Every structure is written in structure tokens, then in C-alpha cells.
Length: 433
Image 1 (tube, rainbow, N blue to C red):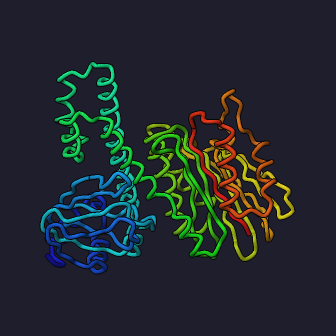
Image 2: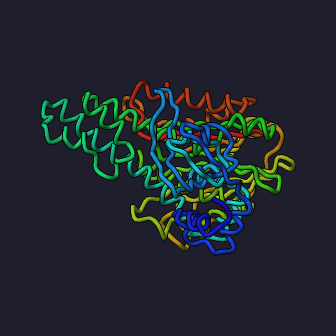
Image 3: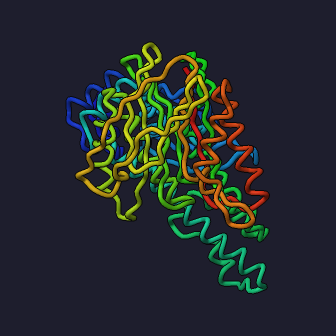
């Protein structure tokens, strides 16, 4: 297969590229590399840099993810299809491994070429986000099915009809059919639910930045941690190198928990990252993300955000708050300032007008961002950890590094809760100058 009508037809049959102009199709063909793979050959490896996407022109591939529980089957994909697009657009490491299930012909396209086409074709980005949502929706369906089956088993109400449903999964679960069938025969529904949640957790972890690598690349003392209340959550943090020399730092909190919140989190963060990589305009990136979310939000979810752009050279700090808790700025003297906050969450109103605030960080200062999982953690008497306790803790951590400050906050919250169940996601991000 070469630069012919057959090759063009295969590319256009891929859903992400169906609206491309003839010029853009020609551009992808020129920019791409035509490759062939034997059965079982590896096309992509989990954890490696997402330097390209692959258009499967002929054949079939299998997508799997490695986890602490072993290899988790994600899906089987047949030509024509596109793989690796989420990581390539967001410049994230591969979230899964892709192997050829049959002989495969593919067109490998570099990230820069893909990004150029995506910027000129909004429908392509919408298709990518939609398919990512569909994958998590299938995970959510699987969780519901197996949770119901487990409850029925524990109540001794596990009837043959339910077992038959597990043996013959609905079309939405077809990609997981082989795994589901094996576990249904063994009636180990708890294990199935764990595997599905592990798969969702793999996807969510892949969407978060690798903090240690970011710190090493930038030379900054920066740290972040997110602990979901469930297997997956609606909190997130973000670290982005901007092309004007600054770094963007962000935390967010989606209303709700579990898979729906995790899906909305992934879409929100991906939109902001893509916009910031195109142009280092913090309020503009959030406005464009909000415009998409408000027009494609049937579930009526929303997220509070706090994003800051920090210049390591001057210490200047520009930040935008969208209904989020105020950031804390600990001065080298030990005094803690509560930065201005306010605004409306993203995803609710198309007329959002984010307000831009300014601050300055001096040598020895620490910026601390967090979500309400910190301040609203409760003890066994239903008392909240509270903002005053957090302020005192940050003030008492004078001279501590970013990682030490976060570790002290998490330890204090854990000690305060005294074994009480965590009811909300908990996220912290800190950077020192």
C-alpha cells in the first residue's frame, strides 16, 4: 500500500480523519512512515514517550496495560483505526502496549505532524476525546454489572439469568469479553471488578504528569500527589513547560467521584494542556476549554480549577482561579499569605470570565495548591481538618522542600482522620523558589 487511492481511502475510513481535507490527507501521507508488522510484533510500549501515533490500515491489534495485578486486556482493534492519539496530543508517556494480533500494515505519524492537523481540524480533537470517553464509559458499565453480581452472590441471590448475562456481555463490553467470560465461569466477580478498576486507574495515572521527571528536566523543587477516595477520582494536578520559559502549575476538583468524575477530569486537563502548548496564555486556554465543556456536557459536571504560570527567572506568578480554594504562599520568613481566589467553575457557563491575579515569589518562598479533600477531611467526631489547621501546618514547615511540605500535610490529615474512611479525593501541589 502506498500513496494511492487505496491508502487515502484507508486513512479517511479512520474516524478521527474522516473530515480531513485532501491537502491534510496528503500531508499525513508525506509526513508518515508506512510500516508492516508480523503477528505478535510490538507497535507501542507502555511507558515510552508518545512520539507518534499509528494508523492501522490493515489487520488487527491488541491493546493491554501492565499493572501491579499483571497484564490487563484493554481492547482489540481492527483496521482502519488510530492508536496512541491521546498520549501524542498531550505529550504523555504511552499508557498501554499495542501488539499485532495478525499481520498489520500501518502508517506511523509523528506528534508534530498530528498536532498541526489537529489544530486545523477541531473535529479530530472532538473525535479523540469522544473515543476516550467511550472507553471509560465501558469500564463504568462493567463496574456496574459486576458490582450487582457480587452483591447478589453475597446475598445468595445469584440466579442463572445473571450468570448468563455475564457469559454473554452486552455489546458495550465486547472488548472485555474474553476476560469477563473466564471470570464469569469461575464466578469471581470481585476479581473482575478489581481488574476493571485497575484498568481505569491505569488510564488516570497515565494522564497525570510524572513529577520526578518534570522536576529533573526543569531543575525546580516541585512536588505533587493525588490520592483518590475510590480507585479513580475527579481531582487532578498538572505541570506543563510553556514555550515562553515559564511553567504552568494547576490543580482541579471535579464535582462527584469515581469513573464519571475521572472522565471529566481527563477531558478538562487535556483541553487545557493542548491549548497551553499552542499558546502560553493561561486565561485564554481556560476560556477555550470551558467553551468546549459547556457545549458538550450532557452529564452537567463541572470542575473548580486553580492554574498558575510561574517564571523561575523572575519569580513572577500569574494565576487564574475558577471557583477553587485559594493557594497558600509561604514566605521564607515563615509567614503564610492566602492568595486571592474566586470566580466560577468551568463547565457550567459559556460566559465564564476568569480573573487573572498576580503575585511574586522570592527565594525561599513556597507555593502550595490543594483541593478540599485536605481541609474537609473529618475525624471520628465529624470535625473538619479546616483551613486554619492547614495554615498553621504550612507556617510551621519553614524551610521544608516541596515534597516535605506535602508529606507533612498528608501525614497530618491521616493522623487527624484517625482511620476514618476517606470520602473525598485529596490532592496537593507545591513548588519552592
